Amino acid sequence: MTGFDSEAIVVGGGLAGLAAAIAVAQAGLSVIHVAPAAPPDRRTSALMMPAVDYLRSAGLVHDPAQLGHPLTQIRIIDATSRLVRAPETLFEAREAGLEAFGWNFPNTRLNEAFSAARARLSNLSARQASLRALDIDAAGATLTLDDDTTLRTRLLVGADGKKSLVRAAAGFRARENGFTQAALVCDLELGRTLGGTSVEFHYPQGPFTLVPAGGNRANLVWIDERGVLKGAQEMERDALVRLLAEKSQHLFGGISLATPTHIFPLSSITVERAGKDGVVLVGEAAHAFPPIGAQGLNLSLRDVADLAAVLRQADHSAADWALTASRQYADRREADLKRTGGMVDALFRSLISELLPAQFLRAGGLWGMKMLPGLRKRAFSLGMGQG
Image (tube, rainbow, N blue to C red):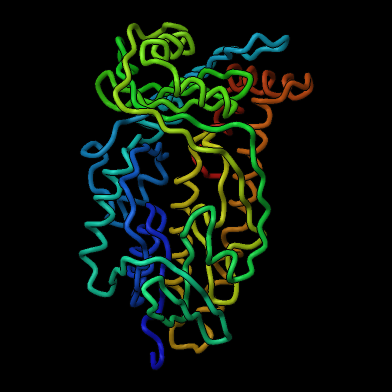
């Protein structure tokens, strides 16, 4: 490894970056994980069972019940006043032969578990820094950090989010779309528990979703026009609570705010290829879309699992192993990225579309999933990321 600081460098400090650094190290490579200090991520992630199974197999989570809360049902309520409305639909995990569709985890708890797993790997070191510049040549990548140090590596993994410097500097072609909608998130205390049921109220500008977080607590993800959400955030506390009770159709008794509200703008990013020239992209560096169908971190963990599989099979004695691995990773991820990105984009646009054909398709699809077992089974598979 003459002239190289490590065989692989992972850039990015989110959950996808942590998981990727661990996976690459577990594949037997020497790894440096470059990530700046960041405030705690107070959001939650609903992980479907394939993602939870991966976390278990990788040693990142041993017992989901110690960290999160099971999701056993998904209830969809059409709260629009449109001419064409969908029926209320309930999906139950037991129909798919599962105890739960997945688990809802606080991101802070996942970060603690992933960080502990990283610390146990002797071939993985961490640098608390940000990437400032990147140069790619035929043999590898040279990174300049914000502390003016440089690092050289054969394989570079970009997990540095929507505004990925790795993606831009390495010349990946990406399509980006902005939306007028944003997402407001916070935790609520409800008068009546959700149990294991995630409840989605579909409104004209997006869903208002309550995800069980243990006891009577729920994680709220409310998608609407940015101005609407900003106005709600600026309301007096009692007025906001009344609005949230109205949006949830007063189904859960009294509501109180358990945490402050935060607003996140929505956008979508897709890359044509997720790997090339010894560089691979994982997580939101490769794909980002609105939080519909709980696909974000689930898709990122499928990125990580495929990267690990490619690296385990690689011939690390070959001079061009990193170039080959990046191409193989891109080939392996292509179908899943296109399928999942297309599914989420179509679903989100059908939710906010005022066009009758889109409303007919959405309502008809939910009627079909409500009445036809075969279609419900297909929906389960797609939602779980199983193609």
